[in-house]
Length: 474
Image 1 (cartoon, rainbow, N blue to C red):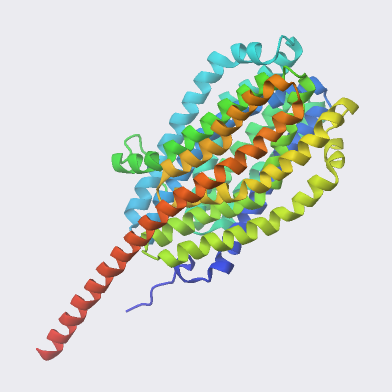
Image 2 (cartoon, rainbow, N blue to C red; image 1 turned 180 degrees about the horizontal axis):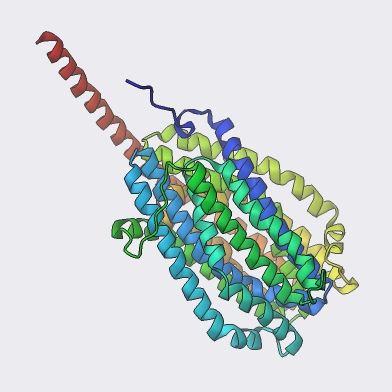
């Protein structure tokens, strides 16, 4: 009998496995985050109004990403668990269903882009027509041509789910490098191409996303044959349900978070348009400095899902422990930078004196909130890997919506912008007890299910042994 190839998800020491999966994801996410930041850096040299417009567009882009992320998270959990159960047919059906859902998400985004862009910026720009024009030009292109983004979410997660996260580096690098090369060409106008400002930034973004989608499709077909890719307009209903069961809570949470971002912009603009630009910069910086945690989280989901499917409860708890250790170590370096040299970071965005006066304390307060968010982000990923999407939803809603909004409304009457930034730090601290309580409940379920799996496995081994003995006696 040929020897079955061991899967590192169940055999490799977790201190190494977390790093093996996490580092490629960190690098990929860092590249992705950097090109989002570079977008804003380039746009800031067009004008502060252009930077404010892109900041106002960011929550809508988060809402778009929520659709793709929900599909991806659901797909990740379903496929990883199917592979842990050695059910390749189930993994194949899940992949086909995810592609179908990605196309549906793109159609929904495109229709919304046609109907709601103008009213949105009329409301958000605070009467500044130039900001509204910059924002509409940018966001319309991003929404109408978002198919590449949706497809990239799916193809990236297929390689992550199978434990081949190093391949993910190539797909996201294709998108990021393409965008970085095209950004200055389309924004400022080079090689005979006219300067297009924020519209140019959007064109570079969607071309980059399409390149990433194409690279992801190629890599999956060539190097990830464990999960065959086939599209159909009649996807497996059970696969759709399984993906949506995990993915919908993620989409709802991120959707609510994006709505919170929209509300925050509408509240912060009462202080000044510069304050909105600072808030936008802080969110972009957050995407870079928390990339270590997000990379580890994305790698943790398939590890948890696989070992849950395989009935290995101890490996799940050990994976969580190592993820937290690495996350705090990595973020510690960024914390030193943001607390020690916030002005240096803001100078990248051509910050005026007014922006400096608002931005320096903002970055320092947000830096502490990013540190406090580490445990919540890790636990949310664990819940997704266990298929407990509602737990992840409760925790993320508390961290990023309920507590921040409540505290901001509490602080608004004081007319102190630093209190608004402080609300985000306090929200993370208040959410910690909730996250730990949910994990305590989830852990009981994990241990019970894994104990049941061990008992079934033992019974099967006993029955097999009896058959062997009977055969020998015969």
